[in-house]
Image (cartoon, rainbow, N blue to C red; front, side, top):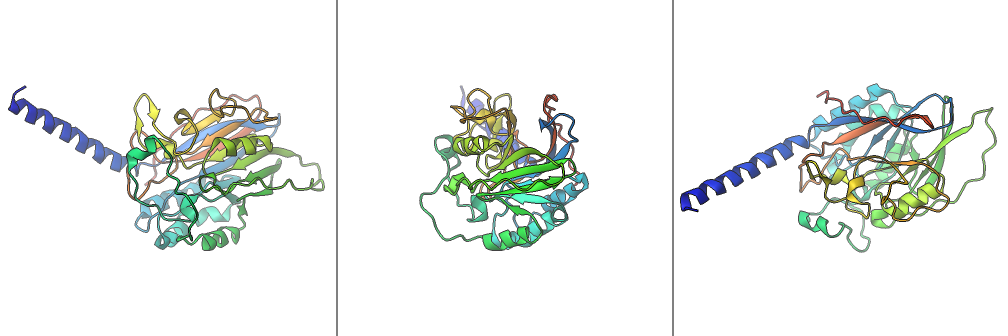
Length: 327
């Protein structure tokens, strides 16, 4: 190959790389709403709508993202569930208040992720291909996690970090159970609560489990505790995916093919070995709405929030339907 051809080939590769980078930067702000139907309710039960948010990683300058999240209140879900990693920096708290403000008028529940305690640190992105991003040991949080906890609980949201709660809806009760972030080794199964006194004739419809990082041990813990649906985030859906192949990494021990979406927990390979006494159920892994501030890109993996409609068991599982951004 002549030097001229080499220069042209090099220029073409450089141009393709530059175009891909530009697209990946744009896709990081191309927000999508996914819709799923999850058959976990008793036969004949009216549907229950859950809005699942995760991994906002909000920065102070991200007003467009905050406005898009705030507008999700129009969906009027029965319950909002958030699975952590809300902030990118301590000075983004007001932006988070903007994003969640309308949603805090609705019932909600939350668990925290590592980026509710600590700001992200720059890392070699290629390192994710052979290990996860955990940093050994514990350090003093540099994000306002105590303020964040007060902000959410004062709005009436359930703090499910290693805790349980019961949520009353029109058709009955949802039993809620959550774990602290397994990525920080904070997950401890909460002790079972005594059976509550009957409230009229309203039954417990289903158990919903919340966790930030979908490590297999955490999923097994929640499923063994009776969760018919586990919701998680953390993976960013791989953040960078290959068209036709999907995610390359999950930043935990969950196989990459389960990096996002709704999956039966008995899917081959998902848990490695089944959870003891596990019944049929599902896990929803959100691709989340944000990125690391040091890698503000997404490729073939749009940022997302999800509306999960719980329906009667036996109902066909609905397919996700992306909706266009409103802003």
